[in-house]
Structure formats: structure tokens, C-alpha cells
Amino acid sequence: MNNKPKTPKQWMRTRVQPQTQTLQHYAQFAAQLKQWQLLFQRVAGRPLADHCQLLNVRDKKLIVKADAATWATQLKLKQNAIITHFQQDAMIAINQLEVTIKPPSDKDAYAPTQQLSRRERILKLAENSEEPLRSELLKLAEKMW
Image (tube, rainbow, N blue to C red; front, side, top):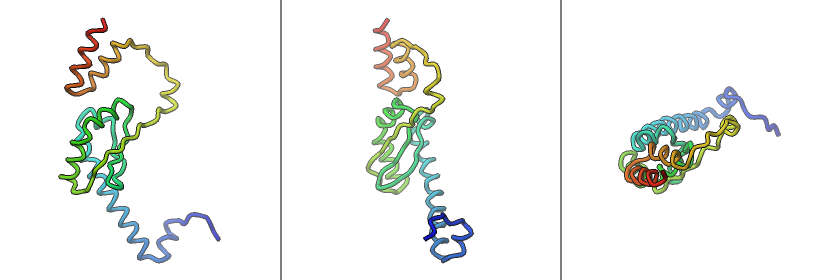
């Protein structure tokens, strides 16, 4: 038995109809996924859409990758609105949002870390947050003088 993967030319030569249907199926899914990604970006809004990416829609779940835990938390806060929007506009039965966090790259792991005070970190987090979280973070930062 030959375990080598088939080349595209071999796939096209053997049983043309099933492979053509499979390729069409993948092409249709890729086009649909692109539409869902655009919808996700619109619903999530900025800056969240800049740091989160819709990877797949599977088993009634939106699978999203976030750049960091901060963005994953922000995404979870908007979870209900995103699911509702997808159910209405994308016409797909979504009932869950699965968020994975992008692991740090090797470059990030060896980069010199900035030592920020707790207050500076809270202020930086507040910059990227939406209300009412932003107000609460700013109040907390004021108390840390």
C-alpha cells in the first residue's frame, strides 16, 4: 500500500466527479467563512476586531483566536451580542463562542519586558476597554497614587 499523498493531478485523474464535488464544497465553505469573518469584524468593532480573528464555525460554535487574554476577556463580554448577531444576520445556528489565546511567539518571549507599575498597567488596560469597565479601571488607577 502506497502511503504517499496524492498530487492534485492524481486526484483529478481518478474518480473526477467526487473530487470535483469535494473541491467545490471546500471552495464554497472558504467563501462563506470569509463572509463570516467580515461579519465578525463588524460586530466585534475596533479595537477588538484588530486583535481577534474568527477561525472557524463548527458544531454550532464560533471559534475565535485572540492575541492575548485581555482581548479574550473583552470578547467574552460581547459574547451574547455576537452570538445574537450571527443568528440573525448569518442565518446559522450558533449557541457558543469558543475563544483560544494565541501563544506568544519566540520573538515575544525573548524581548525585554517593560517594567510598568500597577497603575500604568491598569491605565493601559483602560485605554483598550469599553464602558463601564473603562470607568472602573480609571477609578482604580486614581486610588493607586
